[in-house]
Length: 241
Ligand SMILES: Nc1ncnc2c1ncn2[C@@H]1O[C@H](COP(=O)(O)OP(=O)(O)O)[C@@H](O)[C@H]1O
Ligand SMILES: [Mg+2]
Image (cartoon, rainbow, N blue to C red; front, side, top):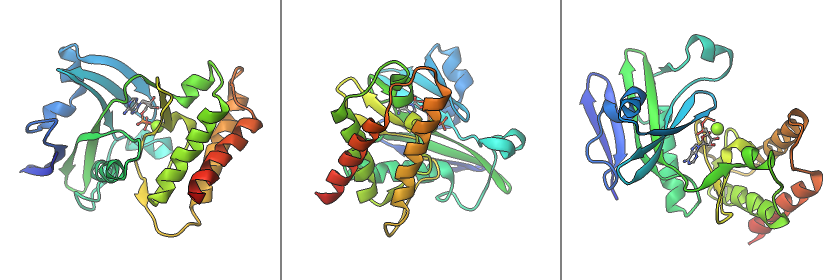
């Protein structure tokens, strides 16, 4: 695998894994084209719409970068340009690549692009879909996780922290489990490598807040404070290794 950056003029910039895609162009990131070819196999609604695509032997996830919140309603997908490498899709691609090299269970980046027009840009990212996986929000609305599963969740978070990665949105919708009960972390928009330790606890707190919030929101939600202890156990066990 080699990561290649391709700048083709008129504000188009790409980065891609050349063992997966040949030469990317904007078509690769166009939901309408995928739809027209009947290759969209699913959608997930978050801040924007994430598309699941089946192309040849590949299972991909295509995410258009969208803002959440109030600003999102006005400038839904436009970001202020401060450099290609500093753009959100490029940063997420490079961070995923770094974490994969470190052996973390995070999606493999396939390709990202931005299209710059003057002071703003729009962007997209394609990753490989995690086979046979569901996010923890989805799972917990149906069934409980075992004590070991929760330890593995804590362990996954801890491994990410050992690589000095801060997750900007550590909530249960960004944690996945596959059919072998492996835990995966996803959605690294605005995440970054940081020095020091002090920020790590706030990541852990954020996850606990998200669990409390979902427990109140959903009539059925298979999570209890006891599970949280297992998660913490997994987290501190890994830190001590
Ligand atoms: N690589 C992936 N493999 C499988 N499912 C994914 C993958 N990436 C995202 N998803 C699913 O799509 C949802 C939304 O994707 P995410 O990257 O979290 O975007 P956002 O939260 O910004 O809308 C996730 O909660 C998850 O259920
Ligand atoms: Mg998400």
